[in-house]
Length: 115
Length: 109
Image (tube, rainbow over all chains, first blue to last red):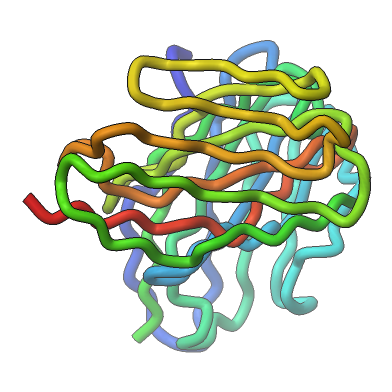
């Protein structure tokens, strides 16, 4: 596609429910990143994929968070048993190569609200 | 991964004044990137610096990479209301892409 696509753009869920966030990176980009951004805060790193493998999961806040990437393309971030503190904007980015060697392109984000 | 300190956290300026944000590392960086996030938007890539002492300009924006490659700065000359947003640096890394804490710029017209 023309850019990084994330869906849904907005998600309201009840506390305790599971949610799945989707990221469709730019075609051919091998690196994919997930970040969490709370209101007025910075970009909290969650996980990084190089191809289908995740060499760095160090940012996942708890075992309720998981992510996968299939076919070196689409990625899903799953949050189980959501809590109110999970409310935030979840941003996905992709780049041709890992790290800061090449420009990263961000999606518009998914705004998650846990009520 | 590389860790950086970005200062200041917030800056309020009058339109027409200059603005500078700094990104400092305790270790030598291979390169550094800068991104801008407008309010309600997503981060957008501005520039990448690679060479020691490198200076790059984009209209009113001047980016510098220190001689020791441990710090970088973004300077905006004569700010405009369109410059409002948060500016993030991203230090060089071959793996995950991590960001500084960001500097949020407010411009009073």
